[in-house]
Length: 320
Ligand SMILES: NCc1[nH]cc(CCC(=O)O)c1CC(=O)O
Image (spheres, rainbow, N blue to C red):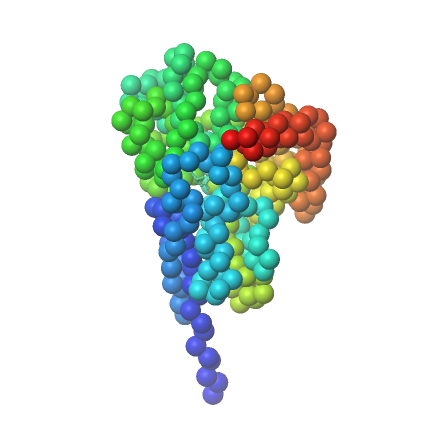
């Protein structure tokens, strides 16, 4: 008779925001379903990004603002893996940690959410000077480019806080990710899904990224059941594009990807903050070359003017 050794408890780290918890408990539930004999525990941690709510995101930059504490937890072995919204995970990870798994993406688009008084309006028909809340330079630049008649204002806080500010009349409308609203069960607040010819989404938007220790073969094996190959290839191309341009999530860089057969198509865009300059291009190739495609497209747009746009933005952020 063989006695199997009791397997270790796998500890899953999460931020404490409602969205992070929904995502983390979903991962826990899926893993538990596939491995009924294993133990999965959730441990929550506050990150810097959850604490600094009064400074514009663009000014603090995004060097792992929402991930650092969880990463330290993994390196110190308090937790074994961390569930992130992939778009919040920097493209360069600390030594010893890797992106172990990318889950199936839901709709990666952005959504317009309006104050009650504009319930019969769309982006195109919001009145001159209407105040639109967004803290993302990517959303700001692209919407300014297409709708110069609108006024844009920073909005911070978690999804619930932003919605309360909108409903209280501080904004006429705000822009949020479709994915976040749906996961929170607030899909009914989506007033208009913004088409990709108006606003390309953020790198990794709509997918979850699970980070773990690079040398933890057991966890890497366990995570395989949640990996979604097409989403992974798309997000690897998107992340390579962003990494090559050396921008975090706080630069106006947007993407769109699709896979047909084994062909991956990546569209990437870099815009100036005033929305006046916008460089956009598309590349196609084998999805097995995802990262190479991302890097190639980055080099192309950089040479087509994106390099100057980004240099200008970095100088501007530096000045404060
Ligand atoms: N930066 C905050 C953040 N990180 C992930 C999501 C939404 C879910 C996702 O994109 O996967 C959001 C909120 C938003 O942008 O509206």
